[in-house]
Amino acid sequence: MNLSRRAVLSTSAALASSVMLPQNSFAQEQPRRGGVMTVHFATEQRILNPSLQASTGVYIVGGKIQEPLVDLDAAGNPAPCLAESWESSPDGKTITFKLRQGVTWHDGKPFTSADVQFTAMEMWKKILNYGTALQLFLEAVDTPDPHTAVFRYARPMPMNLILRAMPDLGYVSAKHVYEGSEIRQNPANTAPMGTGPFKFVQYERGQFIIAERNPNYWRNNLPYLDRIVWRVVGDRSAAAAQMEAGQILFSPYSALAIADFQRLGRDPRFDVTTKGNEGNARTNTLEFNFRNPILADIRVRRAIAHALDVPFFIENFLGDFAKKGTGPIPSVSTDYYPGPDTPQYPFDRRRANALLDEAGHRRGAGGVRFTLRLNPAPWGEDIALWSTFIQQSLQEVGIRVEIVRLDAAGFLRTVYNDWNFDLATGWHQYRNDPAVSTTVWYRSGQPKGAPWTNQWGWTDAQTDQLIDAAQTELDPAKRKALYGDFVRRVNDQIPLWMPIEQIFVSVFNKRLRNYANNPRWASSSWHDLWLAS
Image (cartoon, rainbow, N blue to C red; front, side):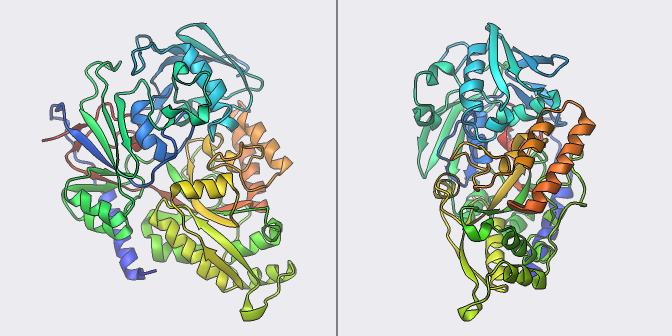
């Protein structure tokens, strides 16, 4: 893997010393207007509209152009954005949003409740990869006036859930841009139009995306920046070199190589930190395609999990910025983490071999039992390392693994639309509440092609019932108990495995001001970001 244990652990120590230092304070400085923010864009997306696809790769661009009803403040609490206030009925079946007045779309047309109604019913409920599950019981959105949107549910929607979901799953699109069109094919999907602080200008595939300051933005005298340029740089070393040359000012979401984090963390021009990513905890995944009858056998899935020495992998390749996970709800979730006392699969090669023998897969020529294809997501170096580690580990128990590497579009199509894989690896991101972006990995009935949802061909009625009951339970203690039952069930059935917890690492040029000032900063609007001279 071209990485020694000593090199990786020294990298982790260097990174740890970087993130534990307090961020420099520039409170005495006056914001400077103008300037161009340059961003490392590592993996191109098929669409850039966050109303249609929830992912960090979409938010990093679309989140500056479009806006959600509700955002997060510096402390991670729900804060007004396109919605100024909200209230719920006692039974949780009606939630009313009062919308901000005087907001216009980038083409000058007014933003109204009709836009919220259309987006919620036609995009969030029908298309948005996490929204389809979140809004499963949404029946209608009433618009009694242009600045009121009343969401009506067949089953209760916990207020805390909807508010925690809105920063990622509450982006609004313009009805007049999409109505009457084939939504998935609309040209605005790669040339987004919104109400945000920056207006889309140009997208040159494989090169760059440009957005410019919105002079009619509803936040007075903002934004400060003149322009944002996202530079498409798939090569991690090239991106790091551009940062050192000052051509890129920000690299998000652990997109650089581990060795480059170490080097840049020692350079006084840069801040290498997990700050600003607290709302985007992630776990490394191992996903199984149940359409392969070998993997449909629970004994094989459990054997594969037992064959992986996860603590060894973390210690030798990830270091201080990862720890052993225990399932789909990470330990950072203080409200819903059920604890480690759930079905687990400690490293046990003897047990793995016994389960494979029991499943009827005896070793054949060369000691090989069967062959599987593994598709790693091209998001970060840790995924590539994890995939190679899986390949080598499974070889020890007689499973040959062929790694098939694809670009972002190819991976999403192959795994989530064509289902042409055996195993896949990637990231699951936990966003404050299991119902936002976690349970959709397990609930059946997800639309075909929706990324980061259950596309495994796995259906389990008990899991579906637990997910639906927890999502609609208004009592916090009962919700937590239901999610504990959910984790125990899915860990036992293991349709996919999430054995590693991490937090994203970002690299900032210290010319930036007001950066990392909320828990989902890279995905947020950057309306108050400015550049020192």
